[in-house]
Length: 228
Image (cartoon, rainbow, N blue to C red; front, side, top):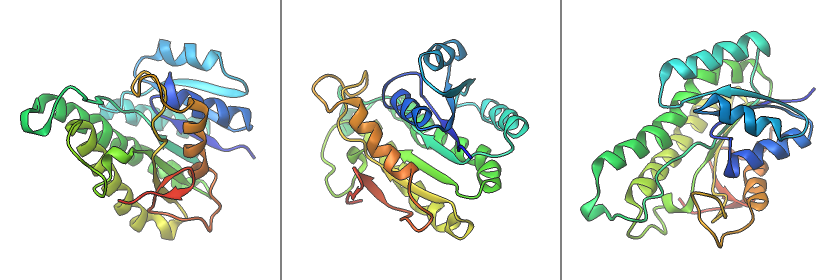
């Protein structure tokens, strides 16, 4: 039986490629974006079974509506990839940061992922092998963190903390929760010069495809542990 996989922020970049590879493998993919028309356009270009849905992860009503739609259509969700993110703020430093930008990053990169998780958690519990993959970044690693990109880095460090907490709370229910760094990928956010998007997506899919005996509460890139 194919999995029902929800990918947030999937109309472009890593999210779109994750959706493509899941659909190609035979999974049912729910491709979400803030704008339904963009989600529909992206879904139309993918193989397999892909359905477009609007999801603005900054809006509780949007997350609740998606959860209700998926409950009625599928009765469960097997995989949630929290990919949506904003503000790779290379233009500012923590010592002169625009806190409105920081707030926006936290609202989407942390609270948005948290909001989507809470809305879909009953459906993940309804499946037999739940997987939550939080697309993070080594920019959020305290072990290697330096100056710059304060909004993005702090929000990703917070997402890593949420990963640890959720994994500890959900492991006994068979739901694996991990954070994944796809690496520096050549996308609109990452800019030119990075690794191909297909490689970044495969790093995410490694966590999606973990067996029930696989790790939970970890931070990985290409299947290898990244220091917190």
